[in-house]
Length: 47
Image (cartoon, rainbow, N blue to C red; front, side):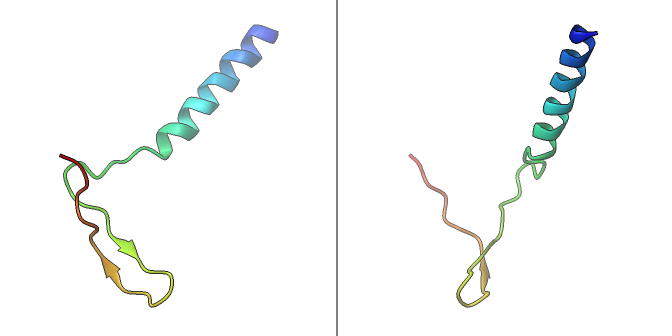
């Protein structure tokens, strides 16, 4: 019984984490400024 509970808990955790995964593919995310409400695409960071 305890093993079944552990498996169900692990599946629930995996399902909840996969819901937060980015599904956009190649499209850029929009960011909304909390002060003025303007939406913009942030610049890419990195080499």
